[in-house]
Image (cartoon, rainbow, N blue to C red):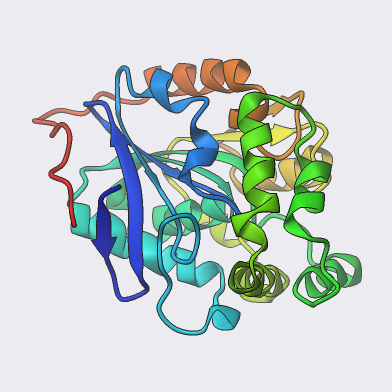
Length: 277
């Protein structure tokens, strides 16, 4: 895997295909391989880049993992796309990946051609119950990654089985658990809330929520996200938290239709980027 050196850590990524760039942003925990069921199809017509957040997968994190937050991912994303020199891209973000993508669309709209937000974080109403759950998941009493993943991955496919294996293995080490818990603590803080900020998103947006997702419910968070971004298209799919892994065919149908409807981009488009080291 090539890597980009940033002030947050060394970010490893994979790259396939040529054309307009699609940047895939995974959840907490997770890694770029979570999208493996849809990457080959997307790469037929696009330059597909799937990164591992600092401290996840093959990427490293500088500093104390217990201090990580949603802003760690956002800061890493800004440096990543800047270093690669990407033209305006479509960002496909799951959970915290969706949160980072929305922030980029707000803060640096010139970099964002479109957003596909799969169960994005940041639209959960903040109340005693949700803040308490984030505190629980941010403590040593948290539900272990494997067992929590079994709850939110509602369909079993080769891709979700691989995700569960990673949740049971490398994502359950002491250091990864420290990072996981820190991210959960940050989800419960006011600064992670996108419900008002997302009104500033101008990029075309597709919202994909799972009807059976217990972590970010379509009936609540999906409606909140749709109200925050009234120009976005909301689609509820028959799955849990990771539609690209659980129902890849349905996910691809929605995403490819969305991509086909984006305004054309004029000018040269680079192909496979020179691999960083």
